[in-house]
Image (cartoon, rainbow, N blue to C red):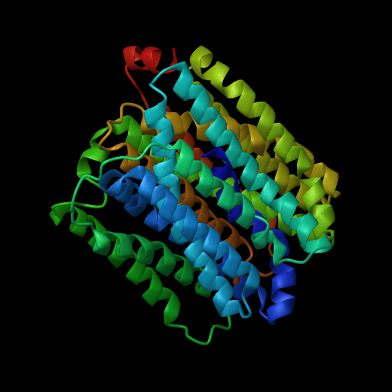
Length: 447
């Protein structure tokens, strides 16, 4: 499960450093290239809850095999894609494979380890692998792009995905499917349409010379309409994609909201690091990737400390500390940009981001799956992962999209993006401060 999580997490960020090389090969400008990043995360995040429900209904082992196979095949297609259209299609299929496989994988872990210190350690390993994969995606991308070419950033994962498939067959026990159950496909489509339309509206609004001036407002209105219709569909459906009972647990709802806001800033920081090192300082892909190694090391250290501090400090204190570290990181990014500092000046910000991710995401993830039953383990995991990924893609769309929009030419894009992220983090801090769980539950949960 950890190997699968690692390569899926790598593919979230692996294209960032390689984007210039992909653009040169296909003759695509930066405006269109962003869809290879955002399209993957939105499709993956939007389908995660459907993937969670599929695992609950059809059996987690079967769905795990299906999603992993789709992800591996899409990775092969991305590496061999002869055109940009096929590359984007492959990225969308990768997101779909992730959405099907990850909730089942996380549900297997949740159900294997009972609530208490063992589950805390297991989820910490899971989160550490995900965080390390996100960061190492930048490092691996820089090295592979410069030494082998950008196509190998996708092809390198294929043999490891085959290992995962064999391991699932032999190590994960089979289950009896729940039987024929209607699936909420309209809800899944609306959940993808809303963020995609929102992204289209925000990106196009930042283009001062857009050929279709009516497109941004129409897309934004469509996003709001899709979101409202999604809620209506879920209320009326006999088998909703997201059962309303999932949102009756107040700590879980607040944890998912705080996760989305924190992930928005974390994802933004990754792109800001890349843009600053390559576009502002002119670093090569390999140099940019190696400069981000301290971030991976810091993430490992933070992940070792978090399980101990969760029980000693409490979940809320760790989450608030993670949000605070991330806010300080955004301040450091803005200062480094304002002063025109060298790439090494970004290392303190990277270490703060590692601490923010290690403390914040792990604590919020634990709250989001505490108290789940066998019937809802998959959907609760899917909601949490969807909050993480959709929050990250929305953060890139708003914070980076607005900060680097041509319409704001003349302002420091790093400063604008950082200030927007800080405002979002302040909201996340308030939401996390409102999370409260009974002392008896926390004592049983954390041991």
